[in-house]
Amino acid sequence: MPTLPNNNAKITKKSRLSYIGLKEVTTTAKEEGFEQGIEQGIEKGKSEMVISAFIRGNSSEQISSFLGISLEKVQQIIEVYKTK
Image (tube, rainbow, N blue to C red):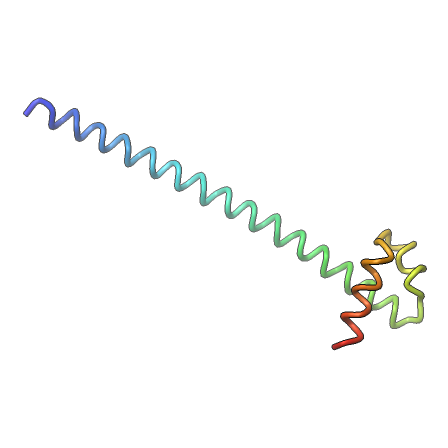
């Protein structure tokens, strides 16, 4: 029976390491999700600014220039807006 406590110690150590690993994965996933949410929010804000500027009569070129967004992206956002 002397191996039982040693075996229990190994199991406990493995459980602890598994818990720590899961906690790190969970923390990383939360951080990545948070960062992704921020990026999506920024993109949504840019799209809203493009649409607002377009509605006010600005050209795609003007919008691209003053918002610093590629002309292709501006045109893509406007096309999506027009189809809604």
